[in-house]
Image (tube, rainbow, N blue to C red; front, side, top):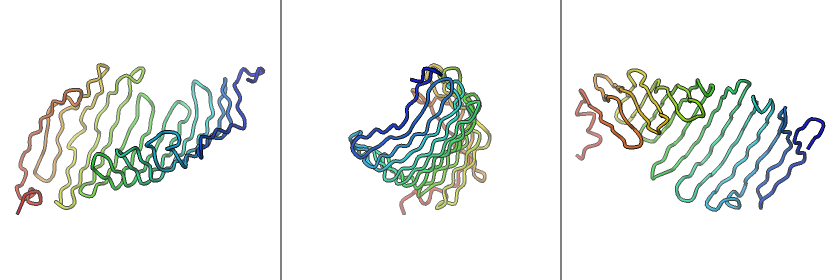
Length: 238
């Protein structure tokens, strides 16, 4: 403890659990300062069932009320028991003055629940009250791009926004479905998740729904219009 400033100061930090290491230095007080490095070549020594390799660095400055931070992380052959595997993942995130976040996550070769994604990319930007999130996922049979925009309420207890854009491509069937117009999306203080009326369109075909309850008891109903029967041919037996 630095009695002159009232700050907690840590220098020459070195923590090791087996082959895993956390190192760095930092100051916590009216002003923040930290440089930390994490190396987990054997994460199962920390938590049974966790596999792969993970590296991360964190730089912190600013104040407790308005921190500024940069985080970078990368992982290879990550796995959690027999439920999830990720071939490669990288994370780059920055928190600037005013608590404005910019974050990018790129992952490849994801397997979970019997499904595999070739790649997944997430991009987030903005503040608690006003932010955007884009999701781009590639599967062997489809490519999905979604864009969300909105904001969290007080205490992060609710979220109100919209699905601002959507694109679903199914190359083998030569289909490309697009969200016709933004649709309201809300996580309410009571825990319910609601999705507003919306339509997906491809050529003259459409798949539409009225307001929906997604959680906790889903109430979902879609109506299909002008869907060509030949588009179902790849799904039907010969």
